[in-house]
Every structure is written in C-alpha cells, then in structure tokens.
Length: 281
Ligand code: KIV
Image (cartoon, rainbow, N blue to C red; front, side, top):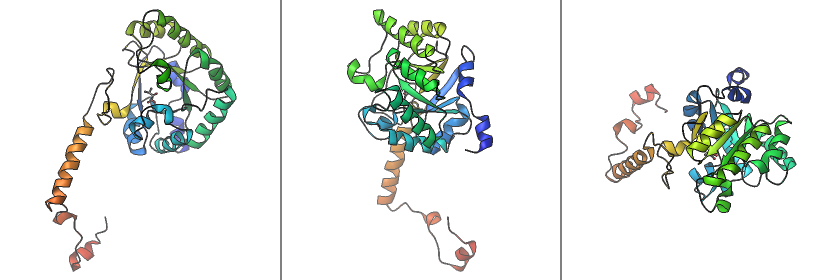
C-alpha cells in the first residue's frame, strides 16, 4: 500500500465516529484477489480466523496459528486500499496475559501492516483490551458466540437468552469501557442486540445479531456460497459460486476427456504468421 493510499484508508476513530449513523459494512477476506473485490464496498475488511475452516478445512478455528494469520494478513494487505483492515488474534495468542497479547498483536501489526486487531472475549479480556489500546493498538472486541470458545459453549449456540443476557451486557460494557473501538456481536437475540447497541458508545457489528446493530459482517465464503459444509441461519447467500464452480469443473473434465479442450484458439502455432504475432500469453 502506498503512502497516499494510507491517507485514504478508514481509521479506527472513523469507525468509532460512525456509531448510530450509516451502517458499517464489513466482510472477511483471506486472499489478495478477494480483498481487491471486497475493499471498494466495505468500511472494514476482517482477516478472520474463520480462514482455518473456510480455506484450510479445519473443523474449528482452534487450530489457527499466528503464522497463518500473518500469511493471510499479508495477502489481504496487498488488496486493501481504502477499508480498515483488521486481523484476528488466533486462539492461544492473547489469553495468557496482556503482555503476551501485546507481543503477538505488535507482531501481527508489524508484519501485516493491519491497523487493528480483533480479540474474542468480554469481561475477562477487558484488562487486555485496555493494555493494548493504551499502547497504541486499536482493538475490535468480539462477544456473544465467540467461536474459539465453542467447546466451552458445547456448540455454536445462541448466547444471551433469558438470564444469560446479563452476562453479555456486562461483556459489552466492559469492552467498551476498556477502549475497544467497536465490538462484534455474534449470535445473540435481537432484543439484546438492540438494547446493547443503545447502551454502549461504540459501534456494534452484528453477525446473527439483527439489523439493530451499527453494522453487519459476514464471512465472504458463506455469502458467496463457496463454503457449504454448513449454513448458519444468519447467512444470506448472495451468490452460489460453489455450485457454479462445481459445474465449471465437471464441464472442463468432460471437455478434456472428449478432446474438446484445448480448442484451436488455445494452441500455439509455428507458422511465419504466428511467429510475427509474437504469441506469448
Ligand atoms: O473469524 C471470523 O471470520 C469472524 C467473523 C465471523 C466476525 O470472527
């Protein structure tokens, strides 16, 4: 990214200032080509640890490492000019202590040139969020269903129903008070999302948390129909690229077997005319 592009990029304070205004548009990306497609339309591009499930075939996000996040962060950086780029801190990279979180967040920022990191957890992570934000690391928080805690939750379950709403409310207030510039609310009931959005001073970014939030985020492969292992209720499919890819691959295989591909237009000649044209590509 050039210095002039840097000047145009959305910043964490600008995201904070969008509280209660036009909804924030956020998507994940993991590769340069996808980042280039997503960037012009988004306020925030998240290099989510969902990359582990979506691109690496892992059964959960627990196996994602800091090195994986750095590799994908670098790739996304090459495709993002105007959106705020946030990179997920993976499981095991920040929970031990604020110092461990700082060391790994600093490495993520230095090596990927991201402008902010995302951390899962509410009240228990508030001290760490405060430690990072006071040392110049903008933090996006993530509460409600935090996928890195899937085993503790006993599955990808809705969080904050009934009496459990108090826990999520304490989490939201704690991360806002600790200095997070925004918070992802995942899989919480609409009434709770609405109440939290009204109560805290930072933007809420919903995923399965209703239109009451200050913004929305989806996993790019979910909304494009490329990740089909399972489909959460909160996903709207804007395309069926997985199905299209399947058809295209089957057609290619058939064409090769039937010798319909390559066709004449894909073949290099060795005539004076083709040599003159300098065919190379
Ligand atoms: O990893 C991820 O993609 C996320 C989003 C679903 C918010 O955390």
